Length: 275
Image 1 (spheres, one colour):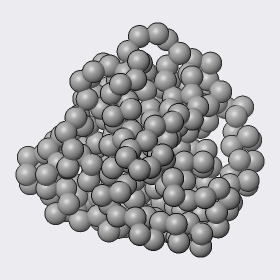
Image 2 (cartoon, helix red, strand yellow; image 1 turned 45 degrees about the horizontal axis):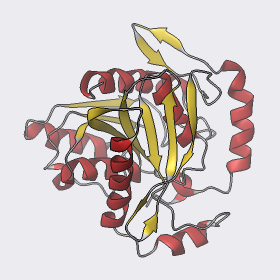
Image 3 (cartoon, one colour; image 1 turned 180 degrees about the vertical axis):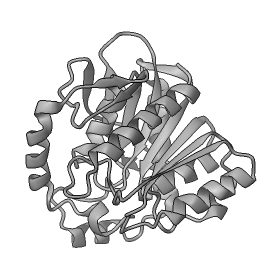
């Protein structure tokens, strides 16, 4: 679990105000053939999105799914949050994937947390959760995607933020069916040894001004992946803080770094996740 700024849902109202202020610039621009989201795309008419329900034995997991409005089957990407998926940038990430032609699903890996929980309540609810619990929830999401009418066969991509970036790597290390991994500012507890089994193409993003997880974490992971022959790309963003992609966060949000990172993410996923 990420603590501090990555798991603080108490400022959500202020973040929603920021989000509403940026709606006027919602939409997409295209540069060099790569999609670049300026901010919020939840109102894009080409996307269908909302909560979904699924479970694993003994637990109701559920999550948030976004898909292109166009009929047919599309490549799929799991989104692994480092915070409650009620924070708007997580549904927005799913919607941004849908605008780019993917089905995006964020499993609710924090489902034990009660509604309107304080940070203290959240810590208590998650105190006994293990990596195995979180990975089982992600697996339930992968199973749900595999059976969804809008999802193409052939495997999924996985994208995560902070502790979700770490768990995206852990999932790819332990489960089959992952075709590509994108990790944003992986949590500082991530170690190179954890990624040794990862053999699928991996892309890492980190801000050099990250005050929660130092950029050396991603650099060490990249070094390990390269040493074992795993295809890897690592991108550092000068001065960008933790959560720089999250438009719901001020002042961490960095629109220039966010746009560049997202264009690289979409290009990478299109290269490796089968349609």
